[in-house]
Every structure is written in C-alpha cells, then in structure tokens.
Length: 398
Image (cartoon, rainbow, N blue to C red):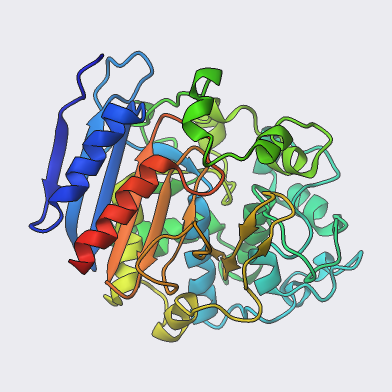
C-alpha cells in the first residue's frame, strides 16, 4: 500500500478533525491530489492541500494549484446573477424575455429568471449540435439558445440543466450589464479581483497551465466504491445515448470530462461547467456570503433570499435528468433528504462533477470549498466531500 502523502497547510483550534478526515480520504478513498478550505467570514480556519496534481504522481499539489470544478462553477455564476439583482438590473420573478426578447418564443414567453436558474425551464439540452469551438461566438450562440423549444412545459417539472444553464445565464448577464460584459468578466471584476480569488470563468491566456491539475477518470475498478452514491438506474442512464440524462450531459458537446484541464476547454466561457480554481477561492466567496462581511457586491436583502428555507416553489422533487430527488434555489442547490451540506436548511451551494463542492452556511458563518483531481461517480455528494463537510459542521457546532 502506498503511504498517504504529507498534509500541508493549517487548521484553527477546534478544526483538527477536518485534517484527520482529509487524510483518510487519501488512505481509504483513492484521493490523488486535493484541497479543502473553510472560511469564517473573511478568516481562514482550514486551509489544507496534499497529494499530486498529475496522474503519474510526480508533481506535488501546491497551495495555489487550480483544477476544473465543473458544476461547482454554477455557484459563482449564481452570485453574479445575485449581483445583477442587487443592482436592479434583474428581477428573479420577471420573464427572461423582458431582458432578452428573442428568448420569448416556442412556449418560453413566460419563463421567469428564477425558473431558468432553478432548472425548471425545460431546456436541459439543445436540439442544434453545438460544440466547444462554437461557444466563443456569443452572438451566434445566443441565436441558437433563443430558438430552442422546451422539452417539458416550463415551470411544471424540474430537471438539471448541466451545461445549458450556464449558457443561458451568461447571455442573460450580457443583455443586462450596462457595459455588455460577459458573466466571466463580471465575476473577475466584481468578485475575483476584489477578493483576490484564484478562480476563473474563462481562463486568461496569461494564466500558466502548469498551475492546473490534470484529471484522472474513474475506472470500472472504482464502481464498488460508489455503489451507495450511484444507484444502478442512474448509472445506466449515464451511458444510454438516447436517454435524457446522457443527452443533457453532452449538450453542448464539450468532450470527455477527464480532458477538461486544457486551455481549449477552460479558455472559453461556459458558466455552468467551465470554471477552474482553488478550494480556497470557493470557501472565500461562500464565507463572505455566509457571514455577511460586506465584501460582496450583493445586498443583504438578496443574501436573505439565497439563505431562505424551503418555499412552495423549490420543494424537493424528482429530477427528470438526475433521476433522484433534488432541490434548487436561485441558482444554488439546497439540502434535501440524505443529501445535505451545512448545519441546516439555510445553507446553499453547488456540487461539481467528480466531487468538488462549495457552500455557504449562514447559521455558522462558514464557507466551504473542496477540490480534487480524481473524478468520482457520485450524482450529488461524493463520499470524500461528504466526509469533510460533515466534519466541518460537527466542529463548528462543538
């Protein structure tokens, strides 16, 4: 058995068990390289990293190693929309067509911003074939997005929009921003630069690729490890090319997830799945939101809405794409059933394919971030992330 790697970083008094849980992920769960961070407001209380940033295990994971986080990007995109709402540029309850008239066709006329970002618009896939190279032409992409017909009556059901959610949100921000900035640019200028975040939605050419960890795909030998987190019927749908799950996960066609750590993938903006960054960056943003530090360009009234407990509009229900019960709220995930993060129902965040996660826990004032380069198979909550964030909550409540 390979000896577990040395754990680097710091934990505050009272959070020592998080380091133990982090170490066990390497000993028991096949971790290659990873980082976990927790912020109490603007103060780091956990900042740990270990392992390797390459599959050959020759390059150590460093303090500033970044990695693709897939749908954990959605949380950062949701904060950008919350910023637009705070500025009066967007209204969650207004029709998308108010801001984007061309969108209002084929039964989409009444879809609200909230329905769009809460995966209830019925557009988890595109009928037109769109590839990674097409995402750079925003005007042409907007035309494709606008004419898409819903796959179910908007507002009546919900189903995860893995990639299309970010594309629609990106165009919506471009429409309402006075300077016509992209969502990635708004995030960079209003969030990343002021807070000093190592996180990008659209990686600049100036960022060196050697900071970015390569990804390791899950193999058949790993399946037993995820038996609890990947029910058979869901696992089968991941590979059923005619099924709604497979189609949504491959629309647009961005290529194999394990090859996402490339400039071609990360350099173009797709705010639903294309972010790259550190666990520390995720925890920093969520910590500022959870503790209301005043550093985010988001009004307290909007932060109140993000933290709101369950409403009639976002009760847990069967997800038509993920085939499990899920709950979405203003662009974020909320806890439900056995899937939960944070100390109570006020917590909100997003998980990413492979295992990454970030969330805010307003009741404790903590923000959490976890990133890794070995891709797991869990649908919502990877066992490695679960071990960490449950330990964090226990420490906070001790």
